[in-house]
Length: 336
Ligand SMILES: NC(=O)c1ccc[n+]([C@@H]2O[C@H](COP(=O)([O-])OP(=O)(O)OC[C@H]3O[C@@H](n4cnc5c(N)ncnc54)[C@H](O)[C@@H]3O)[C@@H](O)[C@H]2O)c1
Image (cartoon, rainbow, N blue to C red):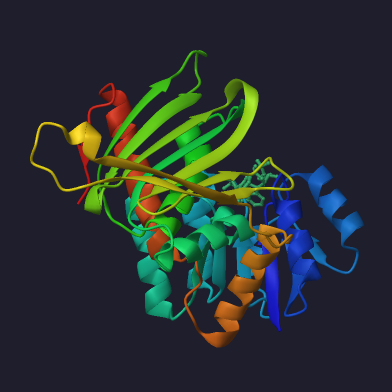
């Protein structure tokens, strides 16, 4: 049984608390929240759980094995490092930290202490994404040539971080989970129309090894809520629409093959293949419950979680490079 302390009971924290409370392999021992009204709400909802105001009360508690950090990103590094120093495993909400150097410090300290770092890249645990990842890894889609995603709506503007750090994080986690190729370069263009606020809309392009091109469009300033992702494979193509309740994933057995030709009549040498479309049955399970299960089992079985520190670092590397590109009107930035 893993005994858990949760820090942050704002928007996302209550979802984590519910999933921890429902998991039979862990126990929600304490909740820490600095706003009194939210502490009162937490206590009403979890009467037998300790509710405190100071994270250090969790770090010092001998009856807590692991901390979940669901506070704003600017606070992640400090809280994560303190938790690790106190000997607690951590699950940090996405993104892991506001800089690659902070991510590296967290990963190094966890390694030194023999503790586990998991990161809340919830979409990696979505049954639809897991199905696409399994098909891609099994070679069913062929070579992945393109990845296009759109994540827009009239969303909550975050004060200090642009929309890439809030929304593109999800699509980057899906991209790197489905297409495990290193990004070579990144370009980002964005719009910041509201004084004092960072970019509320952005277009991100990534060039990956083996020729895959990824394009992500994210926005808090759109009349339409869209959550769509298209994965283009050389054998099959997949459309994932998170808002489609009954057919979230559609796999199209279609594509184009060009026969080897050195002639100028290349157009005549192209074959179009348009086969069946299949909408597979997708398990109806909350991604967050799978994420919590993975965190707890990883601690118990001493294994790496699906979304570990190294994976999260790669995403922060891209976000940092994207910020540099944004300041240079989309100039591609090479990634090491
Ligand atoms: N995985 C997902 O799908 C998902 C969705 C939403 C948010 N998030 C992530 O969750 C994190 C929190 O986002 P949110 O929208 O819930 O923010 P929020 O501002 O609504 O909630 C954060 C809470 O943390 C509390 N807090 C901050 N510092 C604290 C401290 N030192 N001690 C105790 N309490 C403290 C705040 O009072 C607040 O109640 C962010 O990293 C965000 O990116 C993830």
